[in-house]
Amino acid sequence: MRGNAAGVKRTGSVVLILVAGLAAAAAAVIVSPWWCLAAVPLCLLGLLGVADLVQPRHSVLRNYPVLGHARFLLERIRPELQQYFIERNFDGRPFDRDVRNIVYERAKGTDAEQPYGTEQDVYQPGYEYLVPSMAPRPVPDTPPRVRIGGPDCRRPYDMALLNVSAMSFGSLSANAILALNGGAAAGGFAHDTGEGGLSEYHLRPGGDLVWEIGTGYFGCRTRDGDFDPGEFAEKAAHEHVKCVSLKLSQGAKPGIGGVLPGAKVNAEIAKVRDVPEGQTVISPPYHRVFSTPRELVRFIAHMRELADGKPTGFKLCVGSRRQLLAVCKAMVEEGTTPDFIIVDGGEGGTGAAPLEFADHVGAPLTEGLHAVHNALVGTGLRDRIRIGASGKIATGTDLVKRLVQGADYGNAARAMMFAVGCIQAQRCHTNTCPTGVTTQDPRRARALDVRDKTPRVRRFQESTVASALQIMAAMGVSDPAELRPHMLRRRIDPYTERSYAELYDWLEPGQLLAEPPAAWEADWKAADPDTFTV
Image (cartoon, rainbow, N blue to C red; front, top):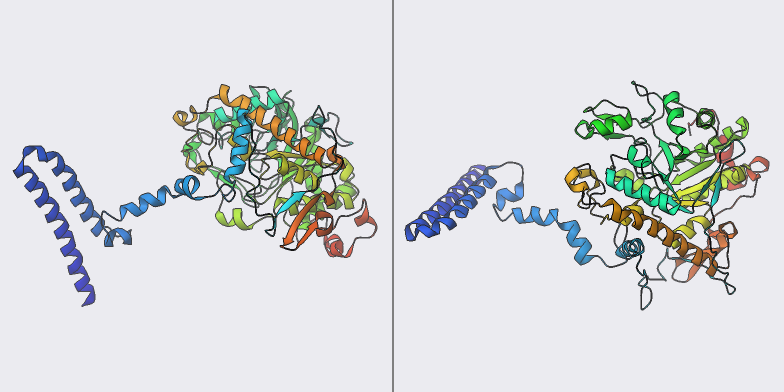
């Protein structure tokens, strides 16, 4: 009986709305023909109300016809309302307004300074600060560079302290890639291509490139998706390719591959990626070229030979320390190492990833850097391998912190996107980026003027490195190699703070090979260079 009553009530509402709308429209026409202009929207509202009441998908609209659409409108513009009117300067996510403003100001070449003191709560647990010295040093006139190239490398490369992190053509527009690479060329720093292939937009401006190869082997793949050594060697020989990198995993989505819908695979992207035009492209979560730590190490050595001795390494988001140690054991037993390892933090960005992965899978960059640095130190390999840090580096402070934690240099992705105009609209996966950075829509991409944005990339990198050097000078350090864990401190509670030297275990060179400490012993013994099984 109640169901019948509800049905009768809903039918009555439908009839009432329709009759009311038609009656209002008719009255308007009778009063004056000029009121016909008002009659049309009244009729449309009446029809909309009827449609809302009878549709089965949205409960809100069935109970609140017409008015319920206001909820969906507000929900759609909620991110903009949050960003522009609600969030404070220091609590936005993923990057707060203060950080975004620093990047924008430095990219434009204006002052990135703040009056009246910090807005941070310096007694909040988790707050970190760098330790200044009573005897500061002069700021170096020339930024130091990091020599990439171990004993097996025949063509070492001097890496800048801050570089463009991996972002593929396809994820970014052609104009964004051109601006980023042009900025790298002008500023003398490196540009990681991402796993989407080596496009003309990476090559045309002349910037130094780190060519990244992912599980799809885009740009050097056979028809059935295997690695093509001949094509790889041919492209790696390009004069702008300074290093080659094998991507094992990505911070925001470690352990899963990607899907590029066929609708987005136009002729240009198909050519760059060596895939059929118009067909959906799937990047598997695993590599075909290796299945054990030993095979990984051997393949890195094979890539280096194919690249004629150019620096070769891999990128990963750290998960199991035991697996990491298994790779180190394989390096020791095989007698060969990569020239660099890029550590991507779990807080790293992406164009699209499942929320669960972005929020809860993979070690944050601090823990990842600590694990990789100490594993290499403990196995006596640290002096042969350079470590790059990738994950939310946007300021000089961010860069110095990562150098303290064990990195040799840093890579930035989202901060570089800010430099070319990104406003953190978080529409990267929709192809509707409002600033033309992460879209393949030509109309939207033209909003990004390459001539205007190219110098912004150079200025941002230059100013950020200068800021890092100024901070290090204030700490009494003239070279990044002099940074030590005790120079970075973290507040534990309102009354207690500890340095990184106290918070984390730091291994001595070769300690794992001689006598592993208790905290590492179980993982070291269980690590097997012939299996990734944990």
